[in-house]
Image 1 (tube, helix red, strand yellow):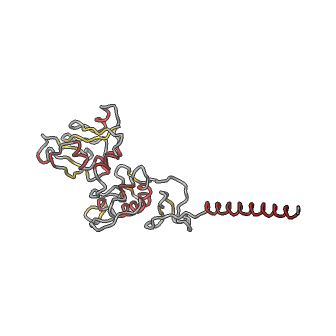
Image 2: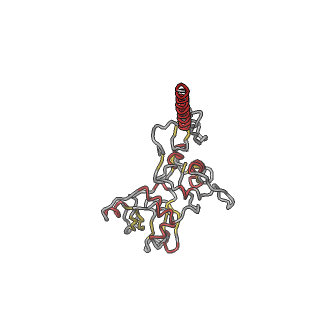
Image 3: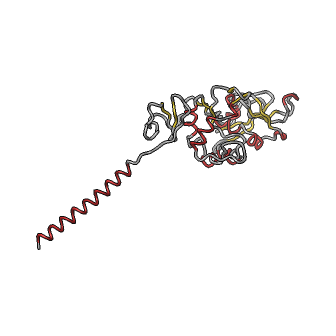
Length: 270
């Protein structure tokens, strides 16, 4: 009788250990589940994955299609963060995915194409991969690029996502000031004990925003100049469109130091 009880106890102990072992193995298997990445395929030498990493084709994991998790994540190497344009497609996609530069909820409202029937982007990666590749605003004469920085991820100007609420969100913590005639934003901000924030000039370089702070006399015109965004003073020569507001088409010219004797600048200070 004693032997039977001992055997039964040993059997129960063995069964308990066996169950615990199976549970541990299952947990281990769960930890070892493979991660798969989506990645760009446009470049000859580099690719960017949906984790925000850039690597060369030989370094990518052949099973997961993920880049090694080394180096900078959301790298903006070769990018102008003011104009949000890059000289490399892959780094454009990487930089674009940075949560501090893109608001996911707004991006997912952007249509893939202009027709009303066009669908919307399903993820931030899809938006970045598509926007960095196709951007008519970086092209002139329909067949030439404005500059080497022609991979741009800024939201399209005709997008329903580009509205006042979204733009204002990007100006959190920024004191928007209107300068005096002929002043640069550097001087405008320093007069208030602050500094000009150059990467916010792009946000101000929108008619919707300019018209919130300046009268514009009903007119907002595309122009080219380092003194923009700005408003032309009323006593300016007629050919300069007195009273009109101006935004620059050449985003690389946006600067805290530009000025013009016949304009008043709109400045981001902090």
